[in-house]
Amino acid sequence: GAVVSQHPSRVICKSGTSVKIECRSLDFQATTMFWYRQFPKQSLMLMATSNEGSKATYEQGVEKDKFLINHASLTLSTLTVTSAHPEDSSFYICSAIWTVNTEAFFGQGTRLTVV
Amino acid sequence: AQSVTQLGSHVSVSEGALVLLRCNYSSSVPPYLFWYVQYPNQGLQLLLKYTTGATLVKGINGFEAEFKKSETSFHLTKPSAHMSDAAEYFCAVTETGANSKLTFGKGITLSVRP
Image (tube, rainbow over all chains, first blue to last red; front, side, top):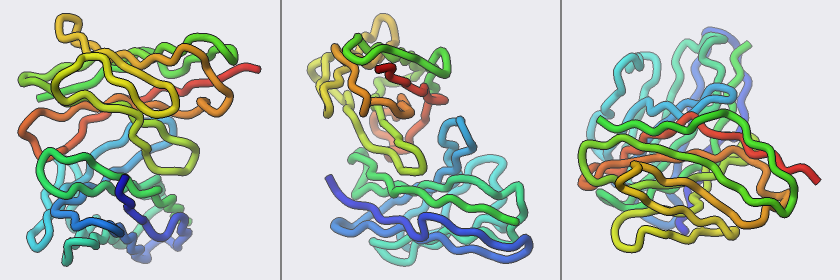
């Protein structure tokens, strides 16, 4: 299957700083990328959907000013957690699709710890 | 709206025993159904999927699942568990015609006893 690479795999940051997480589709052009958040022992909760060249669509309850998503190219989407706080500590996972109704390929996830 | 129910949070089986992980879904339109596996601190790997056609689908690592519309179910099975099957398993649904936005169940942890 296609490869989606997420970087970094782990990051520890201080409270109040911002952290950027990258999601790259390595061997296909991803028109749409999804960002999920996963709490320990829980399911994946969709945070937002990003389409290349347009603003991301955020799920209800997700603060768009806190979780900035940019999808500037067909192979790269970034999630920036701004002014991070300990409660933002979580596992963040991206997925990418080529076009509508095609299979979603997942990145390996990023473990964010805010201290 | 769509939803996925995975009853229970943990299943434990002996090595060589049958694996059965249950998934029920709710969808207002014909669904696409998926099973994913997640190993610790890793992303999700697709095990198998149902879109249209044959209701019994076979996936990787010996897993299979059957779509039963009348029961709104998509249970995952494997005849003989292996130690390497120990992981978290997620059932997911997306509506046909949707943009592959997945709705996940809460997941089930599978443990395999020697």
